[in-house]
Length: 370
Ligand SMILES: [Zn+2]
Image (cartoon, rainbow, N blue to C red; front, side, top):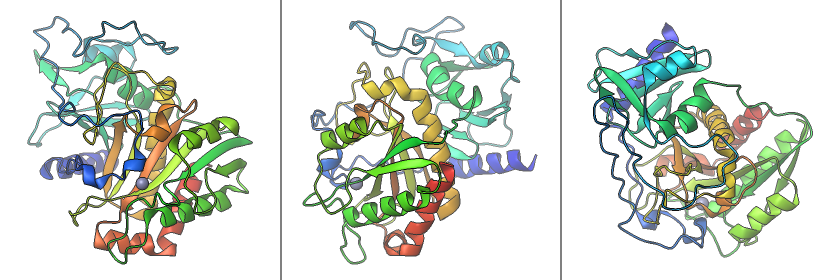
């Protein structure tokens, strides 16, 4: 009861805040080196148009569509129809979604043994166990029932509400990727101009040290101030037979000094719009090697994101999807990218500059990988 109240409270906060995560489509905010070299900037093509409302109970056509051959997906075939959430819940033997009272926007909670997800009608933002996450398409109401797009059921609801959480066995290989390095300095701290590359390397070293006695073999894509290309970071993970890949970064919204908080990214599933495009093209039909791990990516992101928020006390800026991050696309293993806070926010930059805070971030990651 208490937990649910907490979740609802978070939901209310989110709604009151107007889901106020500032869209970070300011290209200035992204160091160029962060993105895939293959993703050519195409400003203006990233506007997401929501799929047309499904007419009545009949099934709507998919919001985007392939004249291309279907992607090679070893996972179940993508479901490109709208589905009644009541029917989906019944099929999966969980309770029907229930409407939440007292919220400004119609919201529904669906609960399994794994947790509660809150869906807001007409919004792509959702809450899973109190964490902000993002759907591909906004749920709709038809004849008093919630309808969710099939890809969201497969890629967002099923991985979290159904199935087993990720388990990490002993003797596994983790590749940690300290963002930037060498002449690729990343962003810089508003406090004193120190570079992102320094803080990402320190964070990664701390995680490696903490995991050394924890059954993991940990490799860093760079162990000093060297400039490693994105493709070499992917090749490094491949060469070291990584079971898991985690890229570590810090963020900037300059010249905005207020934005703060922690974000965790995974690759956008094929057929869905991204949460963040930064002005790069966002081709929904593209299928990358890492899309084979859509389910594991999301579960890993949720687990580490929750642990980092708990450990650091930072604001939750959500688990997000993007398909322009060059270090994720080609990964043949679960892979995520974490933005551990904003160096453009004076208060957050001061925290990130403190070794004690970076140790907290490292401890949170290491604990979540136990
Ligand atoms: Zn970075």
